[in-house]
Length: 126
Image 1 (spheres, rainbow, N blue to C red):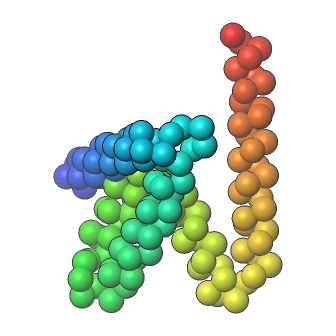
Image 2: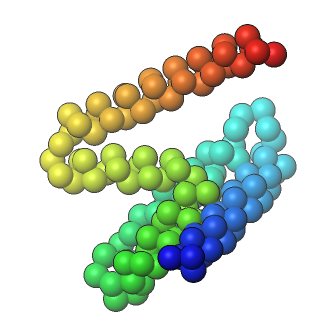
């Protein structure tokens, strides 16, 4: 178990560094007026998540344990938006379009509400 935790932490650290590096490179290239770096990270993250999921689906290319390590560790630190995209696609694949729409609306509404509330609470303390 300790080895798994250490590998997960290492993968998470690499994901963090990859996110920082890509976001910085994109922002330097395209400017920071709009959050292009975050858009690039999230888009690439979704692409990678889908590829890694598919490669591990039958265990021929990567084992379920390796897939879990990469998706939870590296991708979890690189971007959690990829998990959000994957979960939405799974709802659509399961013929639950209403659930997918509800999930997208609730994630965005609650996320924005959480940021707004957190900013207000932080301002009270500051």
